[in-house]
Image (cartoon, rainbow, N blue to C red; front, side, top):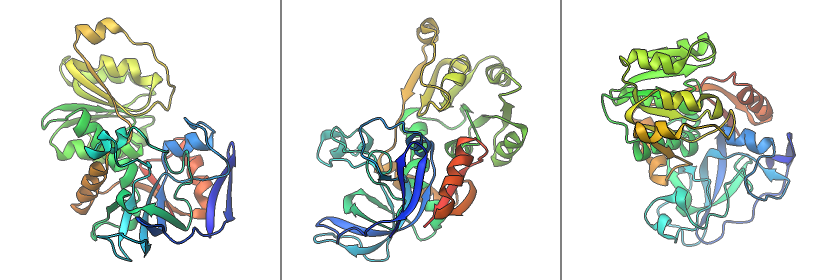
Amino acid sequence: MRALRLHGDRDLRLEDIPEPPPPAPGEVRLRMRGIALNHIDVWGWRGMAFAQRQLPICVGVEAVGEIVALGEGVEGWTVGDRVAPYGAQTCGVCRACREGRDNLCENVSGIMGFHIDGFAREFVNQKARLMVRVPEAVSTEDAACAAVTFSTVEHMLFDNAKLQPGETILVQAGGSGIGTIAIKQAKALGCTVIATAGDDEKCAKAQALGADHVVNYSEKNFASVARRVTNKRGVDVVFEHVGASTWSGSLLALCLGGRLVTCGSTSGVSAETNLMMIFQRQLHIFGSFGASMRNVADGLAKMAGGMTPVLDRVVPLEDFRDGLDRLESRRVFGKIVVTI
């Protein structure tokens, strides 16, 4: 079968490898149909894994597939079902797993495509308990964006920041995969949305998605704009995932008691923080990593209801490297999906 494997720093190769063995008890075999690209793919491509891994490794963290075989004891699934596989290989027995907080598993064995072999191959054996059903109304390309992208936004906005109708939210990097979905989610809730982007074209596209105010952060101070738009009050929530370059401004943009939720650090992992501002203004900072399987299911349900992800482009597996180049250079608006 074809597989896209990382052999070293930026050394991606499309090659033939043996198919997996028949699915073990409790497993299913998936025919992979598509993968969506994320910055975690870029980190892995650069050699930035957070744990030891053995190369070569099949890449691909977020995906959609179709069941083609069932292992012994698998119930509730049939051949032909489309699924969004959950990439974190959780234990299923620790307290967090039992409570449905999958992304806090105490004994996770790795993230597929990052620490262990991922989904960028034609066939994958997956534990049946680590799959979420794709509704019939959701296209395969959209479903590829469920397990990481849509679910991450669900977890950030609703589990952590607890965004409420009528609030004002600042969405950083509104042209990114999660930024575009955050704009849609917040507007659907009835919030006022301020979105940032790196150029005027992306700002225009963010406004077309529903953002009430847009800021080209390469030309204007987004914190000042947020203050002006809210009559100096500040925003209720900041959706942060850029990192060092926006951190201080994101905190300054918050109102008294405001909430900042962050899931990324693409511009750098370290930033200075004014601690007096944190406690004097009673700010709340939430770190958010991954999502639960419930978040994946909730995202797919919203897709079925018409809230689809923004697709920058759909490319074949052979062009996976070009997609990563586009993502790394920040030319993308929305998501890149790779078909298999």
